[in-house]
Length: 324
Image (tube, rainbow, N blue to C red; front, side, top):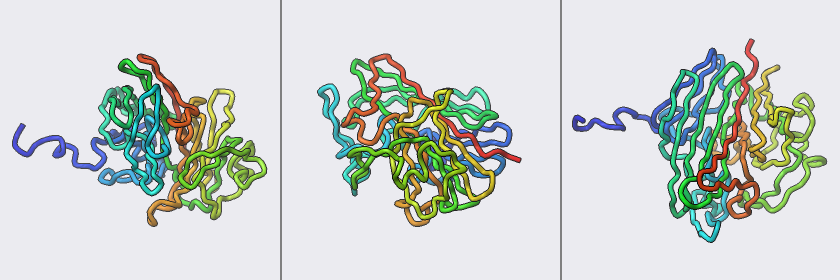
């Protein structure tokens, strides 16, 4: 290799190699760093609020959250007699947040056609997670939209506690968050303390959150207005195909985006971005499918426990607004 030539000469972007997926009028870009969904566009319009190739993901945009989603109190937990301590990357709340794979390079495993990419990463034992898990994420575009599948396989001699989530922000363009309407198929909301950690739950019915969650359809929802959301919802209603569906309508008539997930994702976080830096606030609405709630490595709630050699798989996706 000539002097000065190398990896960073070939890939001069903050998010690493860019995997561009194309199907008809849809285009998605998945990055080497974090296997992150950097952008998703349909018919020239943003379906997701993304970021540029030479930026890092702000606010978790498009990231894969594993081996735990959301927050972990004090970054500390114990499993099968092993004590673990993760870095406190939400220092103001003394939490570890969103797992360990957001900023690492994922290896390309498959690029069999222009609409598909499969990336992998082996999470080796470390002080934050003394277990070994092999991860794969597959993104695919087809006529229905974007589909995403994550798999986790336990490796080594120990069983491993595991949770996963994803952090897409649905675009509200050309409207605003205030004009948007959302419908979340949730019957319960977790009660969170000042650190964003669960302390109980309540039925959505009869609360202000009935404006965004519960059985009512999107047509019955009011605009969000100044409503601020950074909330975790549970008891999700599955359709006959075993999937739940959340929907977002922008200020443009007839523009509805759908985010679906299978029953393995038993929780969803909804975030209107009010705590982001000033220039990024309320530019999109994060609807985050999660297999477990915040602090699951401590509570055990919703955790998947992978025996050596055992494989877990879950899928979710986005249906873009109808074109025409």
